[in-house]
Length: 257
Image (spheres, rainbow, N blue to C red):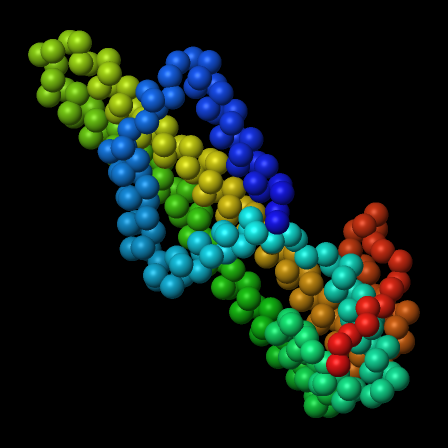
């Protein structure tokens, strides 16, 4: 579970609610029509902008942000070093018999075991990496767009509230409360954009960058195996992807066969 994401959203909500309680009543900030305009309008505009499957994938990815921790690049380095050791001891065909969860790593192992040339393997794996980047970009863009739509629909809700307020100017006592309700939709839009949509887009982008690094480690590790580099050289090469202070000493994980 990603503790940072949950901590950020929960602490942000707590601080905002606390500030509201200090200055007044939480019920004052609760307006169902305003929520319907902002949330419903943002979702509607997002569905107009993107395919339904893309929106569904984006929300699944958002759940993934909170439910899983970030992959450690050191683990991928260790995996590629172990694969290199195995290929030198038992031959490259042994790589095709491994039980591997990662589809990308499995494809790399199969390409190596099939005796693919280095240029072909590089082209194939590069296509996979670029395709992954494009898929993730669409998912990130869904939340970026929602971060733009929410404040806009908040302003639309405010304008609707102001029009309704102006129709009741013959009763001065209703002007203040009506104005407060009108401004609430702007508050909802800004809150959703600043605390939910834009941060999730940023988190997904950070996860994509981490995943790209891990795929690059697999990519370069596979090329090193084809070149018949020894495990120590593979480790020194791949560990360059990991910040110096976070690097682990060379270690090898046992792969299941």
